[in-house]
Amino acid sequence: MRELVFALEYEPGCNRVADALADHPDARVRSLSLHATAERLWRVDHATGTPEALNAIEDAFLNGDYYADCLATEDCNATQTTRVLDRTDDALILYSDWERTPTCASVPHIARDHLGDGVLFETRHEGRHYTWRLIHSGEGDVAAFFDALKVAVGECAQMEMLRTADTTSARGSDGTPSGLPPAQEAALQAAVEHGYYESPREVDVGELAVHLDVPRSTLTYRLRRAEEHLAKQYVAGERVAEERLASH
Image (tube, rainbow, N blue to C red; front, side, top):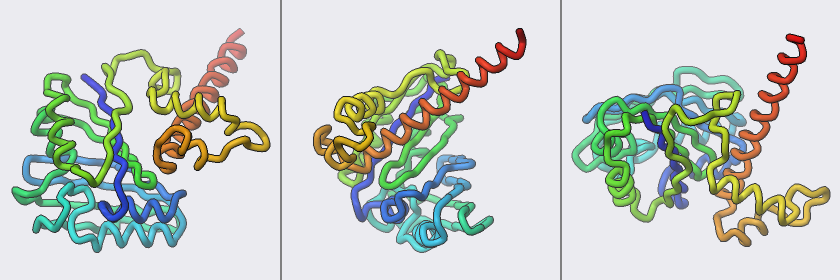
């Protein structure tokens, strides 16, 4: 089995969910379940954020001109249903059922065409940055998948490869990959070198983004995920050390 992780960075006005999340930087949407056949797609998503952010996310899912994951640039006349399964002050769970038309396209359906049946999907949406993690058999044509995805996305989003590896590759004690993706590692290294982590900071994230020639939202995402990864590795390492001490 192979793991494939990539991200789409949506341009303003191209994806209503991305626009809603960009307006509420602390909000997040992650998939709890995602299944696709040749003609349909079902998914359950968990959103977190302020009540105002959740209202905007709910509206984007329920009242968009077309399904949130459709890569079409205009209404493709697909039939979709989105329902709220649960709602609290800081969390929202949504169920979506999408029946495509011949003009529709989506990441899962393009993946099925080029990577085969049985692909597993996991997604995470923060701001305009939409990360996809796919687990597939390894027998498909990854290059053809990305070529088709690039055509479908057009000018609405930039694509970034984050990781491709065998699922049996070495992993840290917390189950995450033992190393950072190159883009995240480069962002973290630049942040350290330019004094982003000094107190007081010698550079802010906007200045650092200009230096690296990447969108501010992309750099913020890379730093946040790198910090999350390193923090989890540190905590996992501390637990292992405590367990070893306790066993002696």
